[in-house]
Image 1: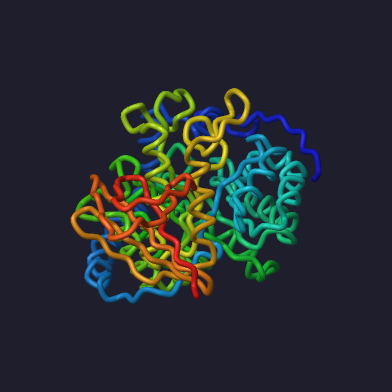
Image 2 (image 1 turned 90 degrees about the vertical axis):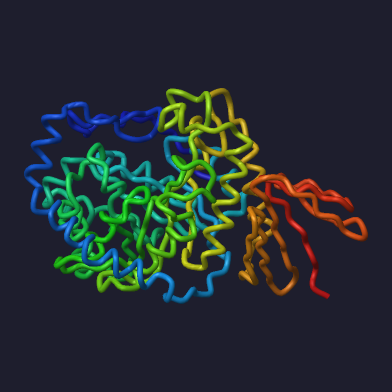
Length: 431
């Protein structure tokens, strides 16, 4: 393994009023309200287009979402993970291998072009995995499209021997990330699309990377008059502000949110019907200033582990998402591992490892829920895995003791089994 020595100054090219927060791994909120107001005023017609596309298209998608068939998606590459060069790069490779991940996502900030070789070294260390490179924008590249053209061309040339998928832009509906309208994003994405068409036809481009359940932005990004196409639709589908992944927002739980996004994707002339959730997590209590939200949205570590597993299970049950990338492997405020004092594996690390091991290379057989109790059954040629959880607690009694594995990989044998918020696995080997 190549030794990676790296130091970072994330403000190297981010220009005021945009400032990067090294603790929570995102830009700080823009405090200059007059600046934001002026920038949004410049993009008035784009904002009008967002409103009208939503009014005309979103209701049609809502009607059709119950008629769009599911696909057959297995778990071969479903369990993805986001990793960062600035988060323990030497240990990351061993941790990725321990989790037996086949697919990872690596962030690349465009304001770090001077450190391109360090990122390339990191990518090469992990080249045995399927890699999505998340190309994060700054305002300089949004405004100067010739600069974006030069840097994206260099990026594609450098990484395409090892990376076949590039997410172009991130969090496009948050001004602190540099975009003040969907039209600004479409212009930026079109630069990458034109490069792909001209010289990099073998790569796949992901977009539009809208964060949260804000599908009015997604609708405009998928229905427009720009000459472009998304090979894969990317979404940062967080549900953390609603608590548990089964909770609803405007009547939509996680699966229904995925259904609606899939319908928009299926109807769009700009997108292939393929969805990656490229970012999701829950912030962890008592980790300020590393948590990306306020303490009000944070949860303790046991709930974090439960919610993570259940998010993956629900997304898999939808049969409309190809991959889910957890954000991320190492981060004090929201990762599977806390690196403030050494490397401490949270219970979520073991929970992810158990889930991945017991559901590797499987297809969905059935999924059902009744009165807050959920059952997912997946199969492959050698075994059947049944996963159960309940939003409350339910005791299931059997005639004989049953063998099962808990969320953290510990085996049990009981006749009366308490099923609760922590998923449990029943394994049946094929005869």
